Amino acid sequence: MEAYALWWYPNHWVSGVIKFLTAVISLVMAAAMIPIIPQALTLSSRAELEVAKAELEDRVLERTQALQISEERLQLALDGSGDGGWDWNISTGALFLSTRWQEMLGYGANELSGEVSAWESLIHPEDKSRVMKVLEHHLQDSRVSYAFDYRVKMKSGEWKWIGNYGRVVARDAQGAALRMAGTHKDISNRKHYEQKLSDSLDEKNIMLQEIHHRVKNNLQVICSLLSLQTQSNTDPKIIKIMQESQDRVRSMALVHENLYLSREFSNIDLESYVNDLTKNLLRSYRSKISLTKIDVSISDLRLDIDSAVLCGLIINELVSNALKYAFHQRQNGEICIKMAERNRQDIMLTVTDNGIGLPSDINIEKTETVGLQMVKALTQQMSGTLSISRCPGTSFCITFPQVFS
Image (cartoon, rainbow, N blue to C red; front, side, top):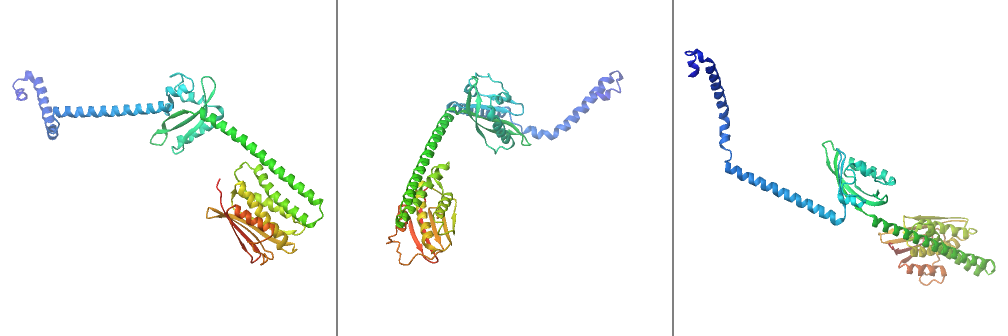
């Protein structure tokens, strides 16, 4: 109406135009409000908003208290273990070191720089390359363990052994590491006792080496004495007994020689031992069997010293008998020695030759020959069983339980 009045009162045209425009804008806004009126009617009342606000505040307080309890438990666990904590912001380079972490190295709280370069400068030069390599691999792939022992320089200048454990706890969308956290543990006492134990073991190993060396030498002295007795005797039977005794003593001496040359004193490298044993036997009987071959087939077995000595004596007797009697002055022949696990509990030893075969009148249970009596007795000593096959040639099979060291 006021806009219409402009035509009658021209002096008030400015006021009329403004009011006209205001009216138009009001109408447009009113039209725009029509769609949202139903939504406005569904809004909560002031009382409902106050209740929702209170519930939200309670949830925030509950979460805050839970976080505080979790942090307190973590701190209690760290205090109880004596470990120090660290937190590295990889993107900024900032490094947080807990008070306990710094105390381990003799520093006061916040005395060390909060930069990762400060930590790197404390690493022992001999350990630094290894430490940085482990860190690099873990930053590339979190599946690579970040746990190692290394030496860190204390404020006093001494070196302390530390166990470092950590992991990447945040990565960006491209997989680049953003943050790492972990703990430091003082392991100086453990390293000290490990070194003492290592020194003690080294000392015992040296003593064992010396013992086996002396036993081997004593057995070799016995062989030499038997050899001198053989040379001074003209009775063929006595000479034969002396030579057989020398072979038996040598088989025991070889065990101690293998132990002396080995770094492990709990068991014997059986293949090496049997090869050396058969070579000695071939040398002893070289005048009779210059072309006889001995084939040794032994799986990856290692025996304790008692079992090795008994097996060596059995092999010595069976191979000696084959070399003396199996080939009837033939210059060629073949002896096969096999040893392998059976059923993961027993070991089977077989000694086979392609000679004339064991005479049918020889009964292993009632034999009077010293060699076969020894084989039977030694088999019983190992809680084993002995069986013989006479065709073709002769095959002795000894099965005995495996002793696990």
